[in-house]
Length: 119
View 1: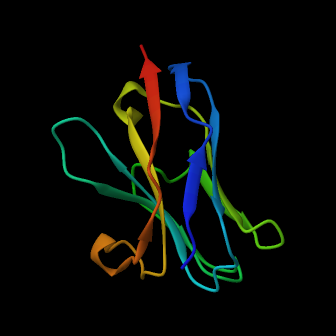
View 2: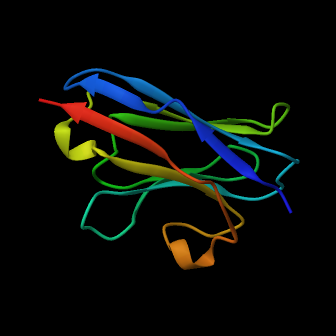
């Protein structure tokens, strides 16, 4: 059972960039994903990537601004976030072992990292 640890969150001005990382304690031969949850809102899908990295899916809110990638040699998945907006403010979670945008299918979750975008 791999443990997931996110990092890279912080405070950034609107229009800025952040790169989130999610390090797994063991090799994860599975899809990896990023979700986020803003205060008072339900958790929502951001992006997912297959084990080989050959296929990615993005939420409409992330398309064109966010890029998910992975380095299997480092057991790490990344989320590059550009052109950040205040509405991107949330706790970002990585998850593994699931399918697509359905968070109920993911078995393992990190503790989350806070992203705050100021206007």
